[in-house]
Image (cartoon, rainbow, N blue to C red; front, side):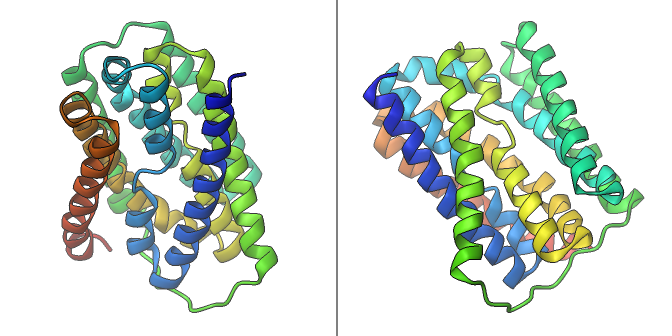
Length: 264
């Protein structure tokens, strides 16, 4: 393994560990609505695509980004399955949702999915239906925050657990082609870590209410990747990443108004 690959894995470990530890704590303090929005700001996909662009080139990233909506579609289904099965216990929710994700990812990697427009339409349709199921059919209500304090050991465990999950996925992505990377880069490492931590810390109902918002805020990843697709070839990797992250921040701010007024 090359030094650049090792640095990428190590960097993803620390970034993801810090980010998920921070956002889950924020979700618990500010409530499921705000937490669900912040948790889906670009993190592991940001790190992955920066290092992929540095190791390969911007055209490779553009090719990989075409399949990102497919990966996000699978992530949405992952959240729905996790939420549905959480009533049977955390272990059941984890196993069933991961079985769904790996099965869908395997099928998606085995067929040609090069039409970005079609991929996006499928994603938007699945996300819309999934949100309606959680909001209208299951009637999952948002939960308020709780100003609890965390020990150093709790913060360290969250960071270590989340960082380990994400860095493992980043390591696996080194051996895959552009279409597969577009899907693997959206592996729900952040979502899985977030849901497990919130379930253990705040209980099933708080985790389920956060999952409902995560389904909506997953659109932010599509916004970020589309911005990367446009900006990387024009202004380069670093400035393209900064601009794309800024775009995602503005999008989340706008989405927050929708979430506050139109969700339970």
